[in-house]
Length: 225
Length: 329
Image (cartoon, rainbow over all chains, first blue to last red; front, side, top):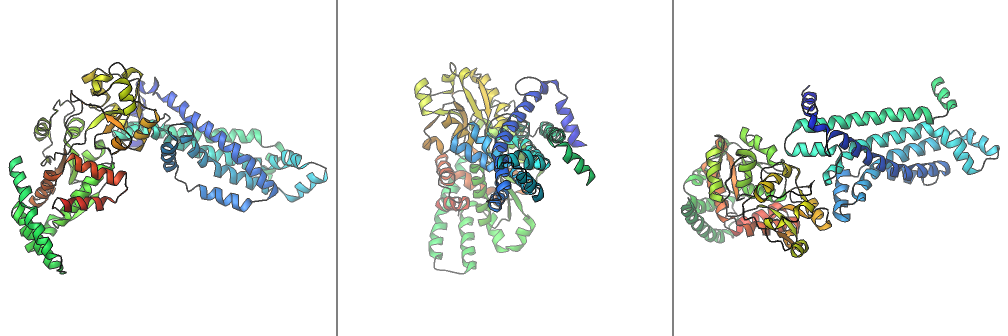
């Protein structure tokens, strides 16, 4: 109750909705950080996951490293990189990419590695090249897990992109950090509320993506089982 | 107030040091306790001799005092000094360091959930006690605090050590634009980004004060940290051209920075001063904290800051070395 009344008292003020520090701008900033970080994480983790899922080589090492990676403190990495590299894009992008890679990598790998061996044999028997096997059989079959990995990564990143505000950037973290600095809990609660709403929106978006991306045959199979 | 305290400061360490030297050979704990009691009773009156005659009863009656600190190294170091000095007087202390900005810890000490916190008199006055105050010098600020503090709180003796906010630029910027004082920024401020802690934006000695006192409107404000690694990195990196940096920040020397003069006292006096919750303190605590204030200087504070921030020395090692050096250890 108090959380929502705090947040409501803050966000009903018209001043919060206008200008360079207004809520719409902060949401766009947050989505911008998320989109870039997720794109970079996906460009690294999806091909790598497919490669090790397809070949089976280095699977144990890569998946374990990816899981151990989750222990890296994102905020610590952010401050470290800011001091090492200065205030450039990499300072906030690298920590968010590092956060986004493990769930994508592990799910893509599991999806591709888990394709029914008989299906692989059939694809090979039809004379498909390895690239065709990956593109036409393994990736479509693994699609539910690939989308799940992207969804989990996106939720991690969108919720954690608040840390960009720690190094003087924008995004919804601005409200949380600035509000905490002066005990304006309405501002903190309002910022946190929008982070939660964005995470839910991202979740909904990927449920939509799953509908489109997963082949029809698999969807029916999923329903039957 | 000052002359009396100064005599006490000079009188107390000498007999104690002589007795300490004699005690080096002695191993018994009782012996050293007895000597410490002799030394302090020679200095600041009868308070501690009564506590050592029956060590159990007074400490139980006193309970525990909570020493708090704000969330930056120097304040934690000062709090550590308070803690060690109080423990040397057999006061039971619970440290509660790294609480947050003043906006967070001030309500806590008003309620008494913290008993003692090292404060800076000017910032305390203008951010929490009387935001409209125009007091600038140490005497003005302390008088205003004494008059306006809530009845549950009081300030003790101020130290000469000052850690003032300043508008700081790099030596390169200062040279290029011939800057020595904040007033010199007038033609440049519009093109400058200024960095500082998030609360600098709304504090009355922050952007608001710089506009009021010097007519400065900066191009943009970048919320960073309180004179910490992000602020210093942003200055070096050119992300900001000016920043709020504390005058005892050791990187002013190591990073070649210039803290601009503040002739109009936008930043009020910032003497290190103990702020206490009245009901929690005893005469022993008051005299111990005042003895620290009488000995603490800006230079000593700068050296200790450098030790913990640049050389990564242990807080309690640095604090106890200083206490020993000034005869309070």
